[in-house]
Image 1 (cartoon, rainbow, N blue to C red):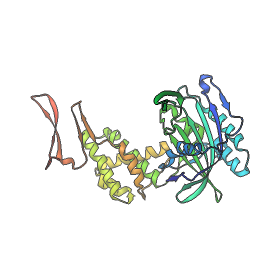
Image 2: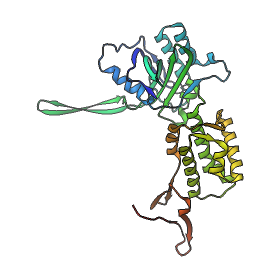
Image 3: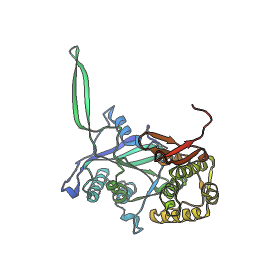
Length: 351
């Protein structure tokens, strides 16, 4: 967990980045923005920039396909700044130019880009310096109501930024005792055309740790149950929900994940286990990750990804059945007279 409440701003620069594909341009701020004399703005900016990172668990690292890390533009400029104690604003301008160059998809929105340096960001009990890079793309309209002459006036402000809605951000933590950066990413848009933030601008990949392994396991298992198993088995929706629920029970009731134990207790069927192994291999190759045969289960990852596990049977527009427990207590059938499917549910008491 990242603690930002005691962080102190050292530098802040703001630029505007348009969409290159749309023949828009970028505009670079001529100098850093001084907020040292403002008593309110620093706290508002801390909330806007860093609150979205407070519960972020996924850690990333910079990389480059050619394996030469200096070819990663963001890493190069941030590393050069910390190594040589260079000019912060010049670094921020180069990062803005780089973002503009990779803003080539027609659907990417223009927006303000903020580059900041802060001290006393705390992660796992240690204090770090940090470079934060943020982009605001979406604007809101706000109403203002205030008293005036024993009455009230109302006005509005358009194209304003909601400090509770950061669109995109990256936090790069630096410690003097280590040359490695810890990288955390936020991308609230999460659209197909928005992968440029991680892939093209930052060029980062997920660090392999317990959180990543747990999350990747849950992703590949969900795909295995909902899609891959259809190759060999004709499963009812309730059977797929049961398989997902069994995997959640396993992850919640065990501290350590063991691949063979998981396969035997959760999947069971030999043909299904073979197909599952194939799904894992394909996932690891496609996303260049290693799930591993044994690792400590990360409870925060289970909590995050379990929301994507479907546990609801949606029956036309009339009923929703939530399936949480014993699969044997629900049966599916077909009523010949009505020409309709039905579910029979067994229970002891109504609550």
